[in-house]
Amino acid sequence: DDGHQRINFADFCIYMMLMSRPDPQVDIAFLQMDADRQGHVSRSNFEAYMGPSFDMSSDFVDLFFGKGQVIRVNEFSQFLVELQREIARQAFVKAQREKGDGHGYIPAAAFIEILKTACGWRLPKGIIERLESLYLFDPVHSAQLTALKAVQAEKLKGSNAEDAAKAASRAILSDVESKAKGLGARSFNYADFMAVQEVLSQLPGICALVDQCYHIKKETISPDDFKVAARAMMGRRVTRKQVD
Image (tube, rainbow, N blue to C red; front, side, top):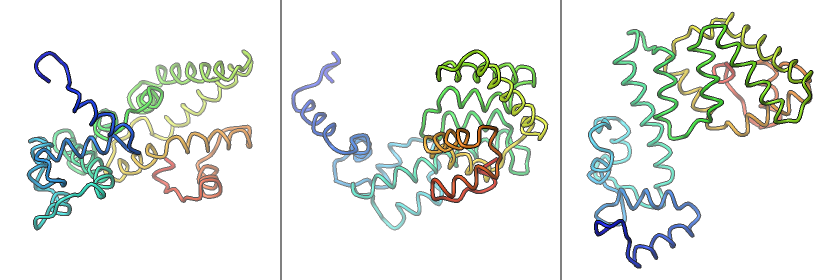
């Protein structure tokens, strides 16, 4: 960059080389951290890259950089996975300190904000709206939003007006049931946070699983239905917290 937002040919060649690799985002992140081009990421490289907002006294830093350890390029992909978890953990700890109840719990608004901003993914708009309708909105607003989303989903499927109306009714009943169980007035601890992160990291597979279950059962899926289906169709066990 010479001040005119231009790149030279050498930089362009490097960019094209990176884009042809299997995981270019990881390679680019590695080059950004390896600022002195030593072929590895040292503690000082990492600290300079993360800035003052990251807690360098954490166990995470000791695990990966203690006793002069460095991160090499073949280790970097897994390191990034663990780093994102640590960033999310630190964000949760900060929320506990600033907004918590003193017993390890944070309010729903702070919980949703961390999921939106600190977990390394971009949550789909529908997921954000569902979380907000469950935990932030009053029952009437929540039911209206739930019904609207159900109708929109049925229209995308090409359903007729009668099917759309039935879907809206089912969605409202499910939303009311969730509210009755106290789901809309919850605070969250770190175990809840970990469970939600695990679910969101498997979101495409879980969405497909729920869709398959619904087409088989033709009615609302219970928590136990979901647990059995996850074990049978995904080959994995899910905890009660993850189901909730």
